[in-house]
Length: 488
Image (cartoon, rainbow, N blue to C red; front, side, top):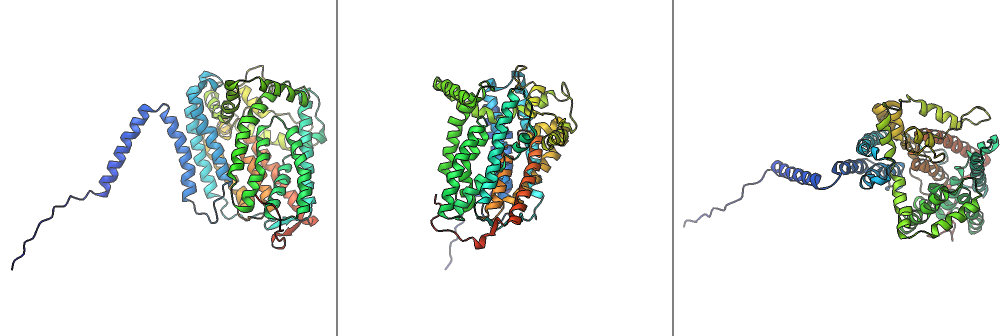
């Protein structure tokens, strides 16, 4: 018996390469349409490339252990994107915030220069110091109360000395040598403040110790905020320290606390501090605060929005600094060829006792005046040069590439030495916080960042050595978690 065969028709298979080519073509058409429709599409593309560089590196690198939200690369990348990517988009849509309309054509080229610098920074971070060992205080906890109070009191006195120096400068008076030297130790207060919170979350101390520490450090922290009123970044960081310590002690992120601090920073700290800084510097702090409150109480909704949201976004738009450098360097402003990168850090680090004729450098103010970002009558405002802007000012594009590569390498060394691993490693994490704050403020001036890095490294190294010689540390294995310690 014969059987009938039925022919089944099949669609010809589409080669994978052809399908991929079709997707690319469709994507190209869509991208072309978006370029024609979306305003400032090239600026958006560069900002997207900046963000994509960070995402690609974090996704492809080989890293053991849990993801560290506050790794130096992540923090610097976020701040860098706000300064360059988001900042460029903001000033494009709000050109009235630019210090001069003639700066607008240089915003996108400055963003392209920033992208080149960030790629070099990522390359330096990815390739250097892979096998750096942790600091010698790894796996150690503080013993007793003195490891908290010694840096806390010294740092508090440093902030008070800094406040005194600002008043003396405002009145045109001389600077005492001891007061100037003491003010250089002010960053150590962050070490103590973080150490208190991290030890609390990690359970290193008993209830009585925690009570004594918080009873003393809460008033001191309020005093630091009062003494440094006008420094927005420091206030926000001091408020964020408990959340940072909680992350490193328990690897859980208190998102509600961080969101609350951000809202307070935008809607309270920025408007109040900006208004405070506009008051007469020679007035007492109490009177300046009284005038600030009176001025803020008279605002309507529109003014409050401008002083809070728009002011905070304008503060992050540091893209204007490299744009001004691109506009004027080589035309009206000469290249520095390393002058701002060498002389300025020396003048910042060396005390007047050793260098009596040391110049009083106002790097941000001098930069703003040089590149016409400040009016001639302004004698107080500081303009951040940014690392990219300062490197271009000194050595053109090669300086940006090489300098940002080295900067990425240093950030990698900082994290490997003080930040990586060690959940209950209070001393090393406290040291890392000071360097992390330096990473947040690193775009102000590369010369200032370099001098701050050297100063912090000397302070941290000396402090750790003193702790070990004085017996102020104990192995974490012997520091059992105390019952009844802090809970979130």
